[in-house]
Amino acid sequence: YIYTAEDFNAIRNDLDGNYILMNDIDLSMYSENWEPIGSYKENVGIEASGFSGHFNGNGHTIYGFNVSKFDDTDIFNQFGKTYGLFGVMYGSTIENLKVIANIDVRIYNSPVSRINAGIIAGYGFGTIKNCKTSGNILINVEYPSYEGAGLSVGGIAGSPWDQDIQIIDSQNYANISVYSNNNSWVEIGGIISRGTAEHCYNAGNIYCRITGGDANCIVSGITYDNPINSCNAASFMTA
Image (cartoon, rainbow, N blue to C red; front, side):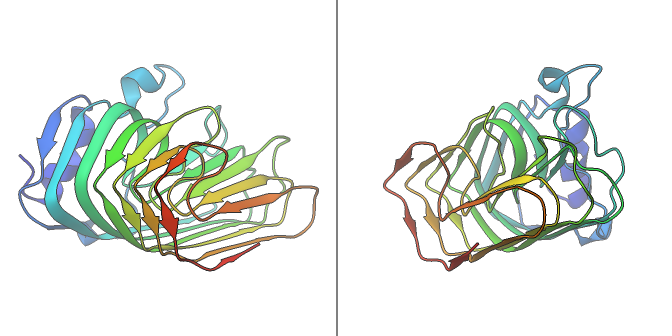
């Protein structure tokens, strides 16, 4: 059972456990340096380092969740860097949760391989259902990227083309802004950058600007290039 911010943070010590949130919790005690639960580690792979358990938010809210990263280090590996409450999902389920977040990532002097960002999860595969997100996501990458680098950003989850997170009966109200001044490809979805969305709703606005290089910004109110079933978006999109 999860009663406190400390309890929630300790999930990273048992990534395949089953958890129930018993009340609203405030993560502001971790300031702006939250490290996502579940990550990619090259020496063990995501099957051992991703979150593979079950998290039931029990209708409660996690607030005070802030990420502020400037020129983040350890940015180059096969999966790049993930930002979210949970970093990497590995066959896990997250449900019945509300999250209020502010994610602010600015890369000025570090080369980028890939960035995956979403309020609940950054990357992986699994299921997110009956969840609601709100707040803001800002990704600003100015440094020249590695060839083939990419940014995958979603209001709820930011899973790229080679993974699939299914999002069901969920809503996003967070605004997303992405700025890139390099050769990175950019995919933004109001719900998820790429993944399956069913009975979802997005009201968060999306803004994308790319200057320089030969890259594209692909924006969708729900998700890009994946199945969508009975979803609606009421957002402004600019790219």
